[in-house]
Amino acid sequence: MLAVDGGAPLLSPGEAAPWPHITDADRKAVLDAMDGAAPWHWPMRTVGDLEAAWAEYTGMPHVLAANSGTAALHMAIAAAGVEPGDEVLVPADTFLASASCVLQANAIPVFVDTDPTTFNIDPARIEERITDRTRAVVAVDLNGLPADYDALRAITDRHGLVLIEDASQAHGAEYKGRPVGSLGTLSGASLNGSKTLSALGEGGLFATRDEEQHRLARRVLMFGEELPGQSRDYNARIMGWNYRIDVLAAAFARSQLTRLPRMSRVRQANGAALTRALAGVPGIRTPAVPADRTHVYFFYPLLVVPEELGLDGLPVAAFRDALARAVNAEGLHITRWQPQPVPGQTLFQELRGYGRGCPWSCGHARPGHHYDPAQYPVSEEVCLRRLVLGQSLSPFGPPNDATTMHRYAEVLYKVLVEERDGLVALTRRTAGPAH
Image 1 (cartoon, rainbow, N blue to C red):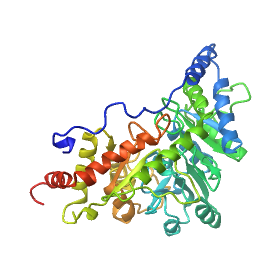
Image 2 (cartoon, rainbow, N blue to C red; image 1 turned 60 degrees about the horizontal axis):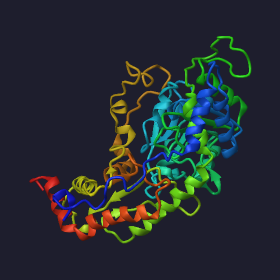
Image 3 (cartoon, rainbow, N blue to C red; image 1 turned 180 degrees about the horizontal axis):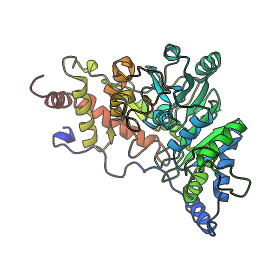
């Protein structure tokens, strides 16, 4: 019997270790940074150590640590030379920050639909969105899987556009042997506590190969001033922010970075083990991994396919919600993520922006912008059918292993195969009497 109907849950609390995986080395790194943080000064040595380590790992010579991935992306947009009224192409299915960083530059996000196999931005749909206002493309390494950068680079080079990588969900993944964070002209990444490279709290990393882009991003980081390398003159050259990272967050992330390659191998192995264990289980589609890249499973996305269980006459949403209820009752946390494409969010439907419709109405943008979610059918379908493992517990990193993955597969097998009739009945109850 399903646990949601009164049966015994299959998993016990604590079967999977939480993320991030904290070691004694991490604790020592944070304590050492605390000891070195007085008297207060900037930049802290620990911050510089993190920047140097990310530069070495990615091969990007110019790195700045920031207080969030959102800040790092804003720095990347500014460093790319995006100005008011310019347009930047962004995936329709992503986290808001991939698009809101464009608004922070008083520029206009223009959305592009999703590749149905990888769930990343679809290179085949980009050129139809390019106008004479387009200045850059933001590619997001969604769920832990890099986008198709060779195809993207061919397009951006042909049109003279800047390719910005949002690596926030995929630290440790590779595309054709090259690490995430190095795949665009410049990149921004999050160090949020849940990420595959974690600062435990919040943090971000900006990276570029271009010294001028580095200088521009550094101005945005710290009040518009020219820093570091000289005494502060308290002279803002541009509009800047306070995007400095906390020294303790930097210390924790620097310590985690020493283990990133090993942690990434564990994530790849765990995700692959779960995919193998779920082979042949009906009602779900597991993530695909092209042969030219690796996946580090920040999220493990599952698309529900109720048609495989003969539930064609019931709403997909009812099956999705019933499956989530049943799986969670068994002790495996699964949830929705991004229930609609970003252009469907209220911010883009109402076009209020900063107020009075800016940046769309500020006089720099071309007129007529509007956002119709129906223009992104693949993104809408993915958002409708998607459930993700990993949002709260993130069980794919160490010390979890294939044993944990097989236990997770047992839950999905129980719900979708052994107790299929119970799931179908729960779906019908979820759908309501009209169905």
